[in-house]
Amino acid sequence: MNNTIVFALSSSVGLAKEICKELNLPLGKCDVKHFADGEILVELRESVRGKHVYFVQSTNKPVNENLMELLIGIDACKRASAATVNCIIPYYGYARQDRKAKPRQPITSKLVANLLESAGANRVVTMDLHATQIQGYFDIPTDDITSLGLIADYFKHKEGLDVKDIVVVSPDHGGTVRARNLAESLNAPVAIIDKRRPKPNVAVAMNLLGDVNGKVAVIIDDMVDTAGTLVSGIDMLKAKGATAVYACCTHGILSGPAIERLKNAGLAGFICTNTIDQTEKQKEYPEMVVLSVAPLIAAVINAVEHNSSMSDALSHAFE
Image (cartoon, rainbow, N blue to C red):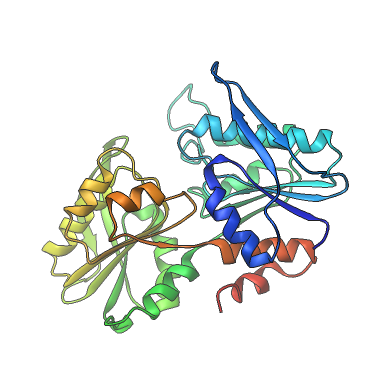
């Protein structure tokens, strides 16, 4: 992989370093500068001519700054004659704006796809997109990989927990496939919370489809934002007789009151990944478990660089 360079932009420096360690590569040298008027400059400090470049950058808060850094970085590489520019976007911002829910609304996740392509990206890799159809918004190779194997592996090896006691719970109907996939990995049954959402970031749990009485409930979602949806679900599961409740997600956005809500929810554990850097959040909530997706992303880069099967590479990523 002498022709491969991995660069870290502002939001994913820690993850990029872990990926480079997995690949036995040095982290690429680049500077990101934010000026007083809000402008951004990405300067490459080594040659990328004829190289296969990988930018690692989640577009979480501040979403627009992180997105602009990525677009500017792509442009810098194209103008410096990079062979390919590949965008590793573990958390894809604007993924929740994937359709017109009302008249005169934008489809911003499609706009972001257009921007990345127009800037010159040759490939995009994401993790657990909120809406998997976003892959179809791109006309370049786009791979959406999942952290479910990583989460399943955590529960299989957790001391004091018998996987036979687990019921995997989807927090809504939209997450049923995700819950079923995790349940298959754990050989566990599935339950579904039936809820209504009167307005954004507010959800009221209504009913439970399935049985958690005397069981360990494991709620799985793609993201946790303000945790309001999650807490209402936790309360319902306890009322239905769950002996313990774990909550897990790929993307721990954890906005506003989320940390405080999780602390007070009486969880047996909260598990997320480092698609979004959790260094500061862990200081507030040291009990949270953060799993690294670096082996998965490193496996993807390896597969791309060696033109090998990505599914085979991912299946052996954390053995």
